[in-house]
Length: 261
Ligand code: MN
Image 1 (cartoon, rainbow, N blue to C red):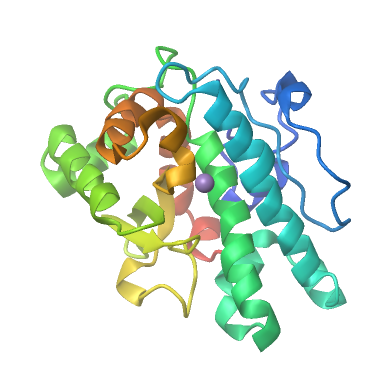
Image 2 (tube, rainbow, N blue to C red):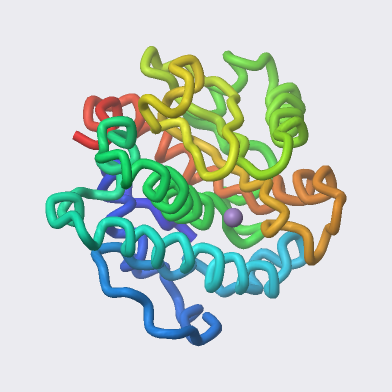
């Protein structure tokens, strides 16, 4: 269920939709009107939509990926369509440089570029419950060591991460990030903001995402209704620690310290 190559995060984004792990989930993606053509595409899920059952149900996954993620991509393509120079940028470059974009581009890229980037990461940070490296505590390795060092224990880390997910008012995300100095931190962002967004997210909350949890209601409402805490508890069973560990290791390398460049 490895969906990351141990290369740079930018390469991950570029190749996320074309890995061999991308199985025939496209057949389950709801049909839709023709999307505006553009440089950005919805990646395939790296597993079938029902693969995360019973923790995350197939209907939610199908709508979340096939409708919500697709809408972010369609709207991002619309936003960059009039700007030929911007169409050539990678998604990660756009995300990191939002504050420096032309004014009419900022909100569309913040919301839809963020939505595309965040969801691409989110799919790859989950996997089939019970498979190697999925759920439970992180396997021995650099990330497990760093989590214990930063938070005292895996249980304390889980508690703090779940707290960030629960305290996010309204829509947003909880993140485990590796900061520029290599230290781990737990942060939360509203809407589709993410910790790479220079000039948008406070400097203290910026860093390279290692773990991401979508706490928009669209991520859980069909199965869990208003019980976000139950969704967060269940989500731990599908966390892809192999992928998280790869992100953590890449963040410590020079290429991972300069997102977008
Ligand atoms: Mn979402």
